[in-house]
Length: 227
Image 1 (cartoon, rainbow, N blue to C red):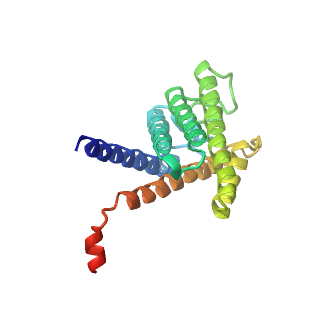
Image 2 (image 1 turned 45 degrees about the vertical axis):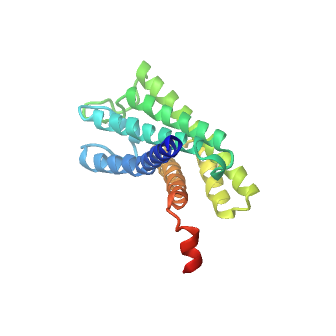
Image 3 (image 1 turned 120 degrees about the vertical axis):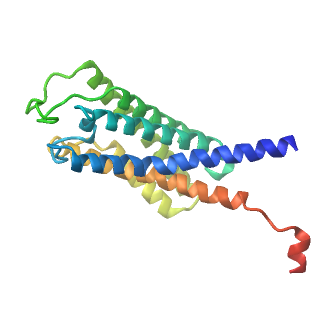
């Protein structure tokens, strides 16, 4: 009985981790879109989403970064517990954990006001503060970690003869490692983040679906035979 109870608890915990992973991406972009619309002066063509963490309402984006990072890290733990259902699970889980940690750090250490946002900020880009440096380093670390995860997923999808997963994971990997264009950096980073978090959401949803099938109660053999 004790062993059964422990397995039930473990499955329940894994489901919670996967739900957190599924919520992380939509949460980030719902928050970013609302802030982008409601905060005066924000223009995605000029301002990176990270700049929403500046100003009087910057705490909202800071919390968004932290919550998203924790959600993706939870997905990483769920992948680590997934066993044979995820090929290359240790590498993928490690990449997701690095991504999650990077987002948490990026949330705790905001970037600097720039390009006229928030109101009163200089029109250009001023000297970078120490916390702005930490923010950028954490963001680079996060995207590198996710590129490791998506790259490993691409390789294992090819080996498993899963062309759709291989293509989608491969495209995500390429976008994560592409250098940013100075003229379109804010838009490019937003699109890259959207695709990256869509990938993590899709992975969490796929694992949650397979977990639900595994956990579904089965009819007793005698009942099946008599049906």
